[in-house]
Length: 139
Length: 437
Ligand SMILES: Cc1cc2nc3c(=O)[nH]c(=O)nc-3n(C[C@H](O)[C@H](O)[C@H](O)COP(=O)(O)OP(=O)(O)OC[C@H]3O[C@@H](n4cnc5c(N)ncnc54)[C@H](O)[C@@H]3O)c2cc1C
Image (cartoon, rainbow over all chains, first blue to last red; front, side, top):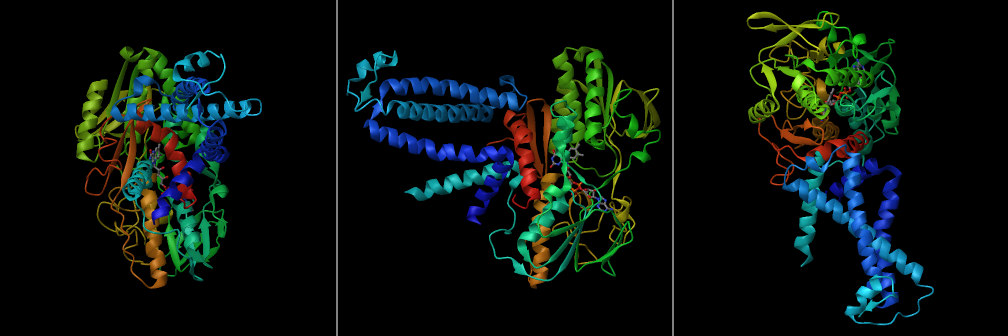
């Protein structure tokens, strides 16, 4: 019985998302894998890239929540209780984290061929890196 | 260390599943199919019949499973309310019945004309006889529009006449009539029949939705909304009735008690209600007609119907309320709307009933007893405005049985409940038809 409920949920999500369920599932598996590869390749987090990914994530979160409202013909005014706010936050977080990881991996993969081992710099210079003045790696 | 976290996430998953109406069901999948040559006939390829066919096909190997239904277009009825609110088009609720029929199940595209539970056979409208070892009756119910004097289904959508129940196109036409009304204002009448009915929340929801549309258009001040209850309560479950009373007061929806629609004059826009004080005529600019409902004639006129008690008059099937097994013909099960049980005329109930009935049927083939029981679980996401709903779930004893106790409050108007109704219900329903939920 244990696995059955999980398969029930899978069945429901399959019906809900149709063919899109597979690309989404693939993304959920590949994105963390890609992140691991990029992190290993760079031997750490590249601060500038991270900041840009986070900004992208913010946008992703907003898009996720907005899309949910649009798809369900509802609006922020419909949030009626704490569980609604929690759900909105979870949707924001899922959209945000997904986009941030995806964005970071994409930037990492694009940068990989031309950037050999990026220079290790201190945290204070991360800000400059964010302004696009070179990439910084946090040790 | 990992054990507690794993257990917790499983519990969460279960809770999430339950909230979508996936509440616990007896074992079905996962075990090896039972070899049998049993002949099983299922009458009706609606929610219950299709789900039963899929489950039986999964659990039995070699059985001859035959579905009988003339209707080629499957109707996802819980979506009718969204169509009648202008949020979905008619295509949202229709699909081809064939697309939901499990492989290895034979579909006879005819209506069943007669059931002979003594001779164990079903006669189709073309006169063909189909014999069975086990019979599943899932004919749903009959909307008895003819019982309302003057009612003309062909006029739905014109002259302020609406009826969400009548079908996909009629629900869309009801939206046009309601939308016209919302532009102009006037008097809107809502009602329910005095018979048993499917989704008893649907007429109430539609009054809430009309109120919301008026408010969005800025015409609420020009409109009067009147809900005509058939008895003294707004809902059969007291705690829910009380909550609804408060919400209707809050929205300014007036309530008439003991009002049952008897006749309608669509041309003059007058509805006649039977009341304890005699007939009362009410004029309207918009009306949502909900007709009396009874068992389809094939069951009503068969030996399967109740012969006494509250379910006899409308011919509901006489089954044990916990197993859905027929009281006098043990090889017959009646599931879904046609079952003569006190609650349970919703698709969410079907989701519970079908695995229970199927388990008893399979157990009988195996010569064992099944412990599976249906507790009357009935669920109705009570939409209170576009964007909010209450997840009302209850059992035979009028207990609230929330799927998410402490998380989704059953009597709160919540966005999350609306989300469940809007995007969770249809996929769950479709998965149920495939025997996967
Ligand atoms: C407006 C509306 C809103 C609803 N909202 C909800 C909701 O929010 N949540 C929820 O859970 N439920 C809801 N429901 C209820 C739900 O749709 C029904 O309870 C469910 O469809 C019942 O399934 P069933 O198989 O018993 O009947 P149906 O799905 O109606 O299927 C019955 C089938 O039997 C066939 N049949 C009839 N007579 C014969 C015959 N003589 N021979 C062969 N076949 C025959 C019919 O053609 C039909 O295909 C709603 C219903 C309506 C109308």
